Image 1: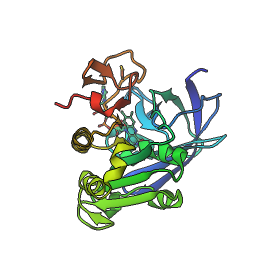
Image 2 (image 1 turned 45 degrees about the vertical axis):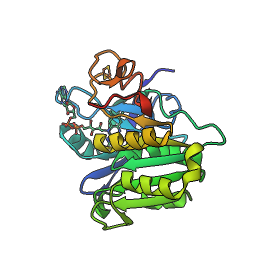
Image 3 (image 1 turned 60 degrees about the vertical axis):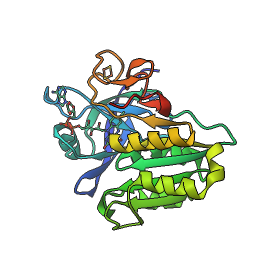
Image 4 (image 1 turned 90 degrees about the vertical axis):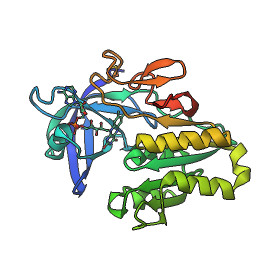
Length: 257
Ligand SMILES: Cc1cc2nc3c(=O)[nH]c(=O)nc-3n(C[C@H](O)[C@H](O)[C@H](O)COP(=O)(O)OP(=O)(O)OC[C@H]3O[C@@H](n4cnc5c(N)ncnc54)[C@H](O)[C@@H]3O)c2cc1C
Ligand code: FES
């Protein structure tokens, strides 16, 4: 199925000063996405910015696809101003997405900051079958809390400043959990997305505990489908394109520099 399509803005809701929930209605037939896949979204009408921006899908119905985006720079500031009825160009779904765990594995979902957006569709798909560890800098930065609570998973939330949930970083909370639940180590699988220093800590925990898993990487992208080499990461088998061979990689494959 063609991955280029036009979509109409149904709603562009401001959640707080730095995050919007964007609901699009594809106007052409669009392929079904897998958890962890992403879309390239046209941010502006002119040549500046020329490049579409990558975003993971959050939720999908028969008629709509929903995205949650953080307002960061020029592209996302223009997206914040999208009005209902505007028609934009979109490419997707792109990338590989998260492989689903085998039946007897317990997924440990570890999200930092906006990493929860990539992991949300996976949590939704796994239903109440996983443990979710979600950390943010403070209470105001926490996203999708009500939705996560409704999904009925074992949810542990932490904030760096202790303004909500446990105090500390999500990697510390994961370490404490693993120390208190030795038996889970042989049967669990980690799925993680978030800021690079956090991902590096989670990789180190996985390595020391002998746990396998998957990490979703975020790099700046230009084309989004493997044509420009603009998004490579270093892996144990050489440089790989995040947009085409990722964004999800086995956690033990990434070479952190
Ligand atoms: C796979 C993936 C999924 C993502 N999913 C989400 C998500 O669900 N929600 C979310 O909030 N964020 C997500 N992100 C991050 C999001 O894509 C960025 O925050 C967004 O692209 C920022 O765009 P901006 O224009 O606002 O920021 P800017 O900082 O202005 O631009 C982003 C980057 O694009 C490059 N760039 C900008 N202009 C040019 C130019 N003219 N020429 C060449 N390069 C240029 C720059 O290197 C810049 O660092 C994801 C990223 C990836 C890789
Ligand atoms: S963004 Fe062009 S190769 Fe990945």
